[in-house]
Image (tube, rainbow, N blue to C red; front, side, top):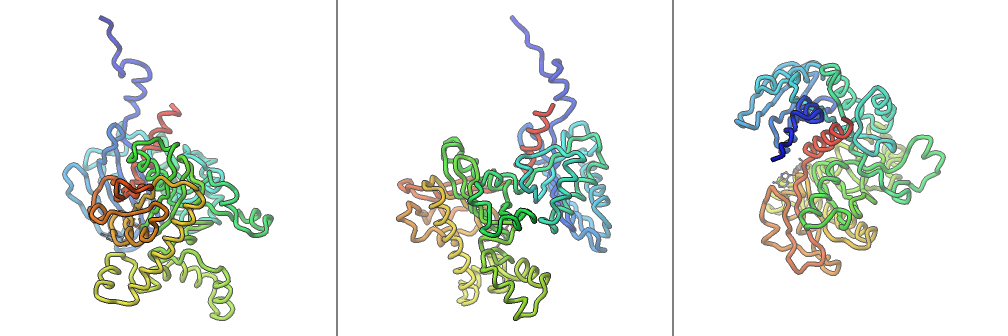
Length: 419
Ligand code: ADP
């Protein structure tokens, strides 16, 4: 009988055993840090948490070890990201998941803007940090916070591989015809103005999971992904590659969102400047924070909007109709871009939960092969499921997104590969 050496006795196995199988995923915002610790042997979650209101007196840390599900909450000033990450490390250590553990293989960071250059997840070194910094002018709200998170995590564990997973990366396959605005080319290039797209980690994950659900390879399937959260974006994915997406230079373009306007005649801005005497910052704030559903009816939560519609509220009804009208336009446009559509997948908070949105978005599109089955659509599932009847030419699906798992998977794969 031949005996095979166990993995741990081979040199590669030793390296693997030494590296461990856990990945910490960090999503650093300007005043918050969301995190999850995953075990990549079975993609399970070990702990999840959130630090909010960093820099204020009333900071709050919420930490849940998945094993017992008991959330621990701590309030009190957490002055900066360094203190936030140290507090997170202390909570993790209490559960036996200290950041100094050899079980921790890597830290995966969500980075919002990777420009044209970052087409894939990337191991972070000084040059990568400098490039993310160079992109601050096109992502002033997000990249500085992401950088702070990365620098803090590197200082805490300088020896550990840290990987940047970019929200824009999945969209870098868009052809120039989709990525360029029809404005003067020299001006556009001088200021790096083009359509980058966001939510890429989610669009990548959901388009692949949709192919899985159909029992087909991603290369063989054309999918329209509708990521409808508080932020919302659509993408057209041909054979696993993104060919068009609705967000642009910033996450403002495209669909009607919770607080963002989405598409609009750009001349509205000059009008508000000249006639409304508003400053650029005021208009920025108006279009990003006070528009979309909240601007139209005062609420950005789809549950509340549906409740108001049920009570006969006209403003809520109009807001819903505008939201659906835009969504439908994008489904039609992306159908035309793709030529053949195998599936339309709904995801994120609204897409996964709001059956009336799914029903209304697809209503009247029978000629395109799109139909939703009322009974299937009413079921709330936490796994990917079809909501179209069997006879439908195009599958309509609800596919829960999992950006943290996707970041962890990409991070771990990269660390394994670079070994
Ligand atoms: P983001 O990550 O962009 O902050 P999410 O994907 O978590 O957002 O989506 C949040 C939104 O999902 C909420 O604002 C709300 O409109 C919607 N939502 C969440 N749960 C439900 C539900 N049960 N029914 C309808 N809409 C829901």
